[in-house]
Amino acid sequence: MKIVAQIKDPVNKEMELFEKKFHASMSSKVALLNRITYYIVNRKGKQMRPMFVFLTAKLVSGGKVNERTYRGASVIELIHTATLVHDDVVDDSNKRRGFFSVNALWKNKIAVLVGDFLLSKGLLLSIDNGDFDLLKIISVAVREMSEGELLQIEKARKLDITEDVYYEIIRQKTATLIAACCSLGACSVNPDSDDVETFRKFGELIGMAFQIKDDLFDYGDEAIGKPTGIDIKEQKMTLPLIYTLNNCTKKEKSWLINSVKKHNKDKKRVKEVINFVKDSGGLAYAEEKMMSFKKEALALLSKYPESDYKSSLELMVNYVVDRKK
Image (cartoon, rainbow, N blue to C red; front, top):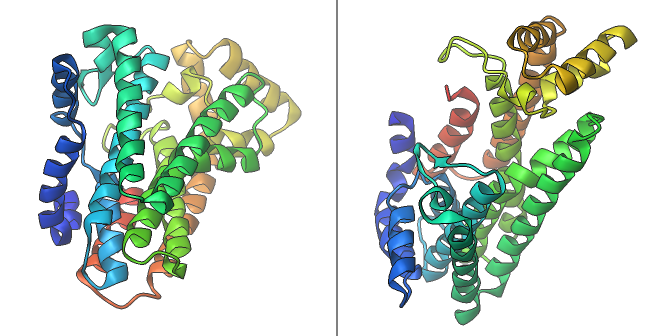
């Protein structure tokens, strides 16, 4: 957590004020809703998304943020929180970040309605203030997140994901939201500038590296000390496995596909798959790709003058690939 505190340091003041504004943006006349949104606000995570918004805005503007920046960060969090509440219903998940999910405490019907409420609150916050450029950035991200999830479901049935399709899935599912945070931060202080597209790309590259790092965790790491194999159990096609499938013999390929499709609950078989992927260079290849996304992201930042905000964003890029969980 020390690194996260360090990253947050140049925007501490803004983040504190954001907390208040974000909480206020959720208010309702319905007591039940207020109880649930209060519960949601009080179990938040590291808050990387608003951090990206404020750091980018301050980097681009030379240290200034404005009301649009706060609204943009609130809209991102409102709409993202809505998608998480809906995700827990879709995945039939009872926990979120170690706490009970909304659907576990208040049932699916209420969870779906709360998600809808948060979504509409986000849309109205932008519309009421004429922030149509910011709203467009966020709406594109939500559309892409939905498409990415559905593309993954469609492809998982056949296990025929190519590397290009995999990149498209993670770009939409994971990277598009970080891209939206960064481009929105730039757009809030410097609309119609090249910075908006530069930081969209920057956020996308970080998101791609972040997801590949997540894929690698499934094959074990120093922190946990043992592989989890959860992705294989869930028949998720990740980069190490895709590389291995594309670079092995026909016989090995059919054994791999058969293992993932029919023996994915067999611990011994899952372990064999993990070892085969490691031995085939799947992990090394994925790591190499992750590092190239990181390098590209840092190259985009290098064009900007030195500042605390730039240092924090560089630290963030490194944290994404070095993190232990």
